Length: 410
Image 1 (tube, rainbow, N blue to C red):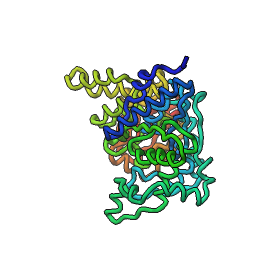
Image 2: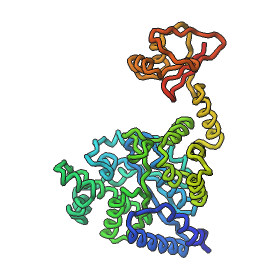
Image 3: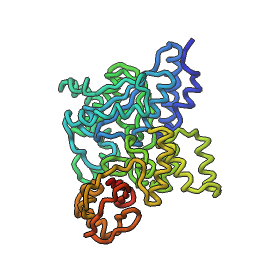
Image 4: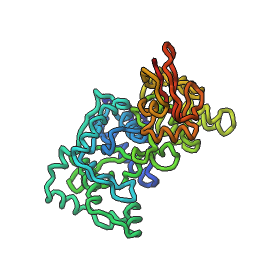
C-alpha cells in the first residue's frame, strides 16, 4: 500500500497559491499533476521536484520563500526535493524580470554568493530530506554541438514574443544573444535531473515551459510546472529584490524583519498574508473581512503578520522579543539586539556616530544631526560640536534615524 497521502489531499495542498495567469494552462497543469501523483501512489516512487535559485546576491529574501514553501509541501508529502543553486545560469543572469541586460558575473562570483544559500534554505526546508545541487555540474560541460541541439528546439520569434524582449526590441534597445541562452540552460536543468515537477514564479513560465519542450525533444515525459505570484517589495510596488533595496532578508535580525513588515504599505498586506505566512486561507479571509468591517485595525493586522513572519524564520521567542523591541524603539529605547560601543573617553558626537558605525561617513553624521535625526537618551541633538562624556555605571542610548541604535557603555 502506498505511503503517500490520497491524491485529492495532495492536490488540495499543492495547488494552493498556484497561478499561471491563464485558465487553460492552470487546467492542463492541474490534470498533469494529478496524473503524476496517481502514478506515484501506484508505483510507490516519489516525484522528483525542484526549484532553481540564481545566486545574484548572498542572501535569500521573502520573495524566494514562496517557491521554497511549495517545495516544503512536496517534501512533507513524501516527495524527492532538490534545492538547485544556479551557479551556471547565474553567470548569464535571468532576463525574465528585466528591461535591460543583467551585468554578467563569473562562476567564482556565483559560487561565492551561493555559499550561504543552502544554510539559509534550512529555515524553510528539511536538511535531512533536501538534495542540494549546482547546475554548473552539467551545464559547464556542454559542447557547442550540445548548445546547437538545444537551440534547434526554439525559434527567434518565440523569444521575441516575450514581453520584456518585445518591449526592448520595439524600443530599439539591445537584446544580447547570450540572454536567449538562459531559457535553454534552465530548460536543460530539467533534462539533466529528469524532473517530474518544477516550481517557479509566474515570471519564469517561459523558462519552465522551455524545460518541457526540451524534455520532449530528448524523448522524455515533460515536467509539470507550477508557478506562484511574485511578492512585491517593501515599497508595495516593484517585485522584491536585493538590487532594488526593497527586500526583507530571511537571515536578517528579528527586529529588522519585524520593523520592515510594519512599514510595508497597507495595500500589500493581503499579498504578504497569502504568499508568506503559514496561515490557512480561512484565517486570512477572516482577518481581511474584519478589516473591512472595522472589527480589526490595519496596525493590529500588521503586528500579527510581522510576528508570524519573524516566527517562521527565527522562532516564537524571537518574535515575542521583536514585538517588545518595536515598542521600545517607538519610545526611543534601544532594541535588545542593539550593538554596544565602549565609550572610554569624551567624544565629539560626529566622531562617535562614525566610530560606532551607525552612519557610513562623518558627512552623513553631520547631515543627520542637522536634520534632527540624532538622539542621545531620547533627547534630540542639535549641536554638531557636542561632546559626549562617559557615564560610569550608566548605559547611554544613541539613536540615528528611526532604526539605528547603539548602547554606549562606560
